[in-house]
Amino acid sequence: MKALGAWLATFIEFALLGLGLACVGVYGYSMVEARIVQRDQRARFERAAAAKAPYVAAPGSLVGMLDVPRLRMSLPVIEGDDDRTLKASVGHLPDTPMPWQAGNSAMAGHRDGLFRPLKGVAVGDEITFRTTTEAIRYRVTRTTIVKPDDVSVLAPRSRDTLTLITCYPFSYVGPAPQRFIVHAERISPTPGTAAARSVRLPES
Image 1 (cartoon, rainbow, N blue to C red):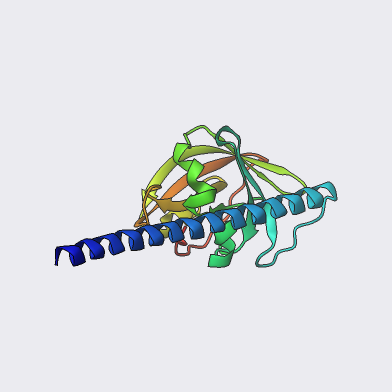
Image 2 (cartoon, rainbow, N blue to C red):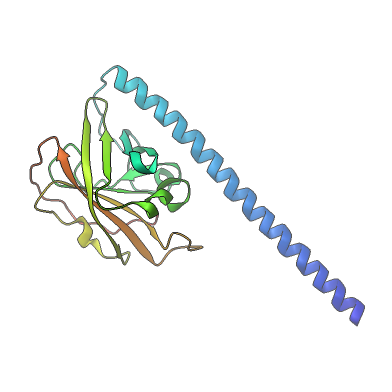
């Protein structure tokens, strides 16, 4: 019986090790695939910017580049908040204004491989959203932690704003129970005002 018990323990140990290695492999493959997609999107953006190409509003289209210089973060933003879009890119929530429009523009991204640097964001940090024709600058005013169904973060503000959404805690394994929100106000071009519609905060 002791020999059988030792065999079972060894078998379980190797099975768990194999499962762990498989999970690491899948995660690594996903990260590499996401990096390749992001590289291709950056190249597309640079070509479009060089040609001053106008933005074509359509699901899955490249909206622009989101930069947080202090965090050395530069990510392509795609129109949409579906799983396919958020797998490798930051997604602009379709029911909120575009960054160049008046209102509260919202974007979501996964913690892993995308928005993880936001755990180091600080009030006063500058965020730039680059289109093919202009750069829109924001300054971080605060961060909050909310529940997934708290869509108040998407409500209109007194100034034009940018709202970034990701899952929280950053070290959580599996579907996270909260959302980490970065609030930033536009500092250039001159802000205006507009209403934004509320939606459920996406998984990120």
